[in-house]
Image (cartoon, rainbow, N blue to C red):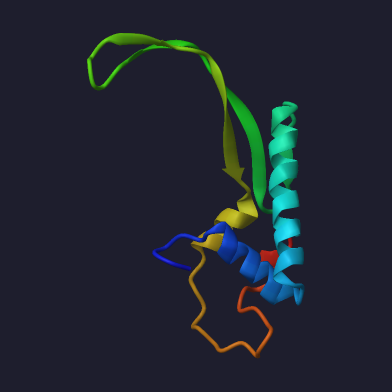
Length: 118
């Protein structure tokens, strides 16, 4: 990871490394997961990934905004925005004390197995 954030390419690389799949196959998997989430949200569905969290849409009401350059008032139309609510297990995994780093054998992840069960 670079500068504290993971890119899609790095996620594909991690899936490839952990699953012993090619990067191309891993990219198809990651793209399919993302596309499936987006399509379900577009249909107005809620996505629930037990132990990880849920994705849903929140409706924003129309409001009066302000153009920051001119200060003029503008009408902001209603819209839907995606919202992620982390699950209890994800919160616990993130907030637990980190274990001392240990070297994993080649081809194996240092992520605990229970963290991978989504």
